[in-house]
Length: 410
Image 1 (cartoon, rainbow, N blue to C red):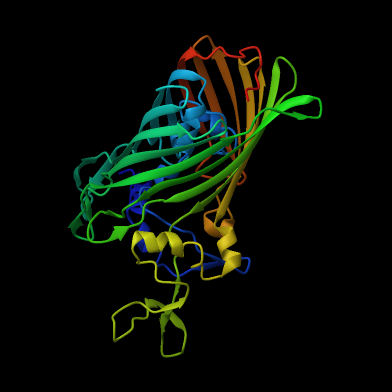
Image 2 (image 1 turned 30 degrees about the horizontal axis):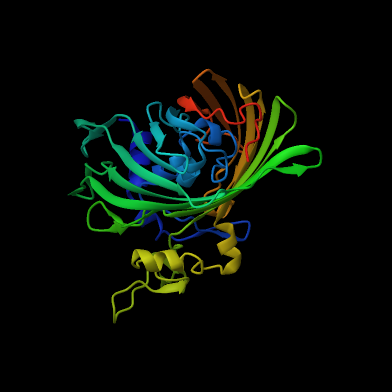
């Protein structure tokens, strides 16, 4: 049996359980990560932004913008684009976990665009056994999300977008604790904004600034069996600056700040033994039957309340709230709109998941097609994210030739 694959499966299904495990300490700080269902929705799906530290809220529009900030597509300079990305995931643990991403957009006119995308996450093949080790069959868990989006320019420099999403997860169609799980599904929406300045002088060079704000995966909880779990609702705020070095060379810098709009797990009060030492059993209020919270707030709240509560419910107060903000940033050098080199860094505090890695990649464009490749380099040895490559292939049609000789557009 692929034991590691089963461990990953159980981890994905049992996110609610993990939020109630007693917290641990790291250098005097409490390890208290936020967990959600369907975490594949937060995996960076494309190579271009993936090579720049997973920063994409304010990058230039491309066929993968639906994931990062769909409102960017109103500024796309080509009428139609389509992209396909394949990402082998957790290669150091399991050889057959993949994320596939297919995304496309079409400009309706110079101010409007529509988009669609499909994310498909497969956890490979898992051999199931009973308590005696006898095979009970194979199981191929998977998850997917289908999006449809629309973006509109509201002025020369500002646009807004909305996207609807259907999410399906079949990772629990096996027996856990004597109960069979079911395929789970839910719906969500994205609300996005994008700003692109007019071209301005930066010293002797031409440049423009960009900004983006995206609220993604805003939707109902997902239910596998009897417990409803939050999906990874997220707020992404980003900025960028692109500089025209000369007629052939451009340089861009981008940064994103991400925060999950999901309640932080509280610190529970535990039953003490006869010696006064805490046990692993959470104390329960005899009157209400609810688990007693020592610090923090009750995470079992409706979605709207959970979103608002996520800004002020960390057991460690404002200091812990700050550690729930992930930062990703990167740079891109492009020559003659044909060859690009990219690099970046993503940082998540150690007490909130410890995803910390460098990224790098290249991009090639020829005629209507482009290919992008990125590679992820964790900051720790034997990290399960090691050897993560992303491969993206894209095609664009009907380019807008206005000011085509100037790589910096207003």
